[in-house]
Structures are given as C-alpha cells and as structure tokens.
Amino acid sequence: MKSAELLDIYTDHLIVQNSQATATGCSDLLQNKVKHDSFTRVLSSKQYDSKYLWQANKKTVRSLENNDGVLILDNSIIHKTYGTLNEAINYHYDHGEGRVIKLES
Image (cartoon, rainbow, N blue to C red; front, side):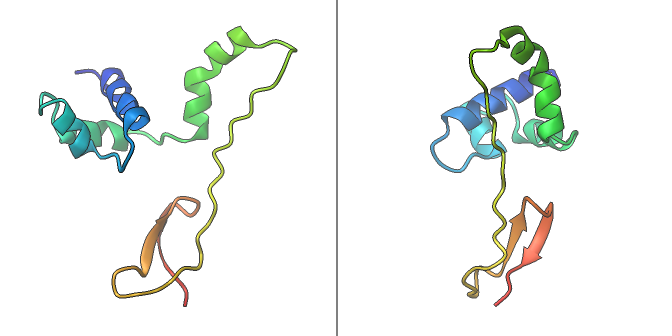
C-alpha cells in the first residue's frame, strides 16, 4: 500500500477516534489487513509539521480563497512545564520542545 493511502487511512482513524488513537488500534479496526508497523513507518518517515500541512493543502485553500472572510488555523501548543509529580508521572513528551522533559517540582 502506498504512503499516501496509509496516511489517508490513519487520518480517518484520527478523525473518528474518540479516545487515544494508535497505529495498533487502527490496524485492529482494519482486522490486521494493514499491520501497525506500516503506519509507524510512514508516520516516522517525514516531519508532519505546519509547513507540511500548508504545502499539502495550499492548492485547495487558494482555490476557495475570496474576500468574504478568513480561515484561522491554530495549532498552538501550550507548554506544560509544571505538573503534579508522583511515582508514575514525572516525565512527559513536550511537543513544543520536541523531546521528553522532566517535570519540575
């Protein structure tokens, strides 16, 4: 299966999922016809950031562009530099930093 098809399937999974979305969960929904490793490989092959999102959708946005309104996309990430430390929670992945960080007490 091509990367674009895998991304399309996984994107649909993200949209309809009402809890934590995982490659394994997506594979399970497809009755393992697509292995979770396929999703993991395609997701780790590129940096799917704001630049990628704009390049992928620029043509469509420009075709619909007019002077009647504005489209605002907000992908802000609020940093979680402080939290409640306990035995289970003292590190977390900070999307703003792009790495795992330790919570400060």
